[in-house]
Length: 322
Image (cartoon, rainbow, N blue to C red):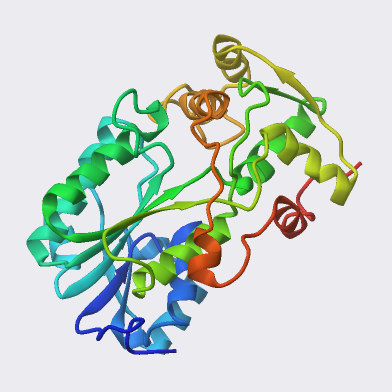
């Protein structure tokens, strides 16, 4: 544990948003390895969303807690008061709603005197013309931060292995061991959610270059079919891939009650992800937007990124078996 961040003197505090969630929760645990608890603030839209055992353990260590709802700029500005460095996790909304929330967060950070934002962005946000639909909100947010005058790091994350393995593999098993995809064999630098979270913690604690964007990827270029097939090595489960058009994939999602947008009705949906996301992800893979492998994880964490087999082994107890 250190009180300085990697060569600099930590005068103010570091605030980690979204500690109630997967990435934010892992990032919170990891940043405690770098920074003394009394220099840390953990936040969530509501503190009631943080699991009680975690909350109590972090509180006992001396971590401060603040509510930071992205829908309320006034509350955000209060939450960000006295903060030097802010890890800003993107919200689950898509489109205008998310852009409004991110505008609130960036404006509140600027007004509160935050000096440095680490933003969890997405691969494709660097593309100025014909930005991939899935990255439009992230490009908008990056531009807000650039115009704010605050120092920054952008984490342009690739797609997570975890989402395929925990959401779509079990669903495919229930649907006759068949999955429909519009990626058409395109490849991406899929990354472990754990690695993304740990990179976030390292950057929040001051590692890395100021005012630099990092592509956060795994070690290999893989198709989504490759990710599915990796299960066979560990669990023996096999899946047939059916490559379809964008329109056919929308029709498939409609047929199993996956709403097209995040504002749709999820009451009968088997997964908490919308059709637009599923189709846009596959289209972006097909068009090569995620066709990159970086050394970010090795540079910032001092080890190779987790492979697809590493992640499959983590989830083997919940994955289908052959």
